[in-house]
Image (cartoon, rainbow, N blue to C red; front, side, top):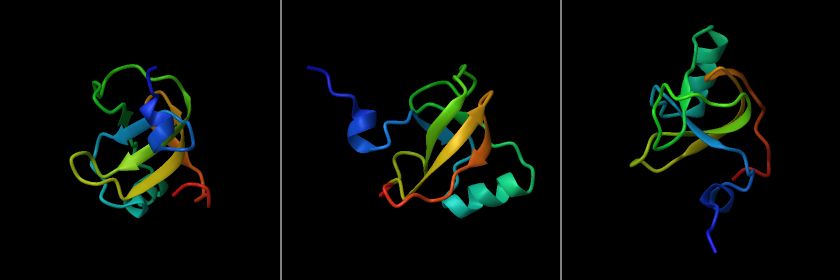
Amino acid sequence: MKTDLTKTLYPTGLPVVYAVQDYPRREDVECDLDSGEDIKVYRPGGDPVSVLENGMMLLVGPHYPERHTWQAVCQIKDQIVVEIKPDRPWIP
């Protein structure tokens, strides 16, 4: 039986993505988004220019091999973060 590691590691069950720029803190992502910068995302182990579906995804950072110390539920459209949802208590 194959285990879906995304659902095992992240209880949200959302697809996991990284920002192309390696942000050390969630606050840095929010600051760039507020200032109007495009935050491009890609799937871990994938090509940064690969096509992603639009919708809610879990943005995590910093990049592997560093330990992930932050995460954010985001609305993604055309590989760009358009909104970061407020912190939720059910996300560790």
